[in-house]
Image (tube, rainbow, N blue to C red; front, top):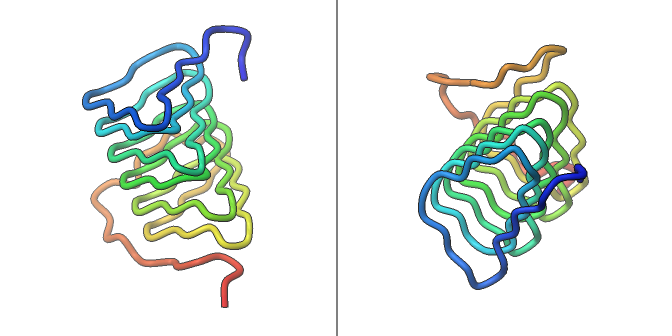
Length: 127
């Protein structure tokens, strides 16, 4: 996390609307809207985001229904589920993570895997 403030959406809380900040965001509840930060987004194991995430980096343990776009890195933890496109420079995927969408990686990820058909990729390392 950065040295700034941490914006925390706790379990049992639902936020509807766009979140824009220069600081870290941690979601353990539900967000229905886009999240845009210049630092890091963490979606906890029980967290859910319905919308696009745009950040410098992201660690996903929960459920995302939308694209995840970062400049530096995305870590998909073992039980994470992403239904949408993933675009980043560096990608770490634990066994058991699930992605139903396109994955785009490059050295200068500017995001946006837009207007492309979503192709199911399935569970990583699964049976």
